[in-house]
Length: 122
Image 1 (cartoon, rainbow, N blue to C red):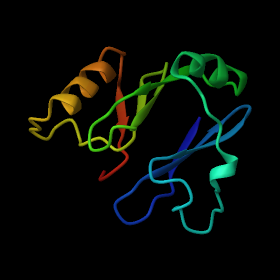
Image 2: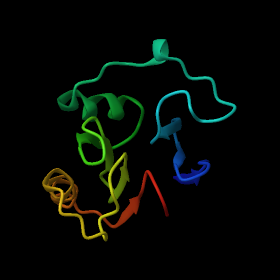
Image 3: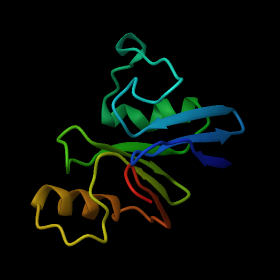
Image 4: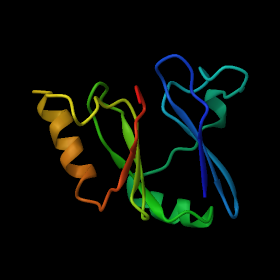
């Protein structure tokens, strides 16, 4: 698997290459990644409980979980091999007193995470 950060400014976007193809993890607002046209009509409504099956159909072992923090609709892509691609969530090393953010990091670390790919910063 190859992972490339194709982000700009302070937002990270990740292109992940798997045996079966490629996946763009868009940590920003859809359509804000320069030179890539993404419209609201291209979106798929996916329930969290369906995410593992959806990803498996792409050849990816993992799941998408809700991780509210800076925004209530933030999500994290968790790969079974120990990678977490966080959305709009303050970095875990920051001393954040926000209860939602702390609970989201606790939820992420319920998985065996070995590497974090943050939505912001690096």
